[in-house]
Image (cartoon, rainbow over all chains, first blue to last red; front, top):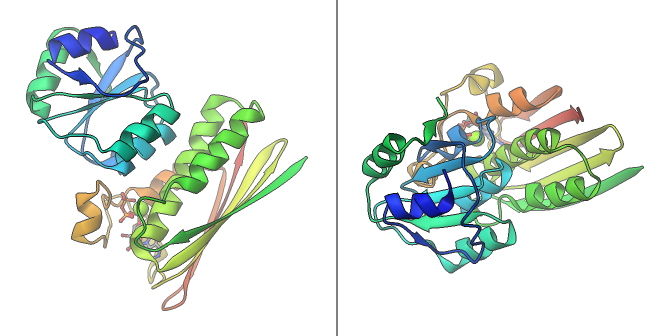
Length: 114
Length: 139
Ligand SMILES: Nc1ncnc2c1ncn2[C@@H]1O[C@H](COP(=O)(O)OP(=O)(O)OP(=O)(O)O)[C@@H](O)[C@H]1O
Ligand SMILES: [Mg+2]
């Protein structure tokens, strides 16, 4: 699923200058546990999370996660956006809960990692 | 070829935990190491860095990068680990509420380091500190 479609389906905002709207994500994973995210072997993943801190972006950087969708209207800090831009990570913000965003994207065909 | 990189980590400093793994990642990319190996290495270094930030007072990361592998030593001054076997069990964690709120403290870090490395040794003295040493051979 393309970043563009995720933005549309989850009523989300793209907040990084890394604005690769055609970037394709194969699968998604929803978690607030960074140590869990760090165990994933897959690539081209969308991470859906309720967490919004610098560790989230660091974790995405180390785990080769291409795109992050922050749920429930939480805002990314300027430091997070800067780090994401440096590392080519797309950050999106959605007003939806993790459950709702995950459910909609799953129904639209974005597969689950597990 | 052999490159040595050294980084300091302050206990409790979560905004800087990740600087060592981030720098190591950039160096490995420049050396054209394959992306699967890079991911294994930087995930292991990041987990070890976060452990120093979460559980110790201060620490140091030393990475020795050669043509075929990387050797990393993460040593810290801190409370040490009383029972290393128990600490290695997935799910075992003594992390504080603050650490958990930041998304860590699932008790998965050490077993994830093990999963991503080819050799791992953990030495610890209670009341003094911990030394985590590992090696990853590139694919
Ligand atoms: N450097 C360290 N100094 C002191 N204790 C440590 C250190 N590293 C790990 N430990 C102990 O071992 C436990 C397990 O570590 P591990 O990294 O597996 O999980 P965690 O750090 O608690 O959570 P997670 O890594 O999933 O965020 C820790 O909770 C802590 O009690
Ligand atoms: Mg840990």
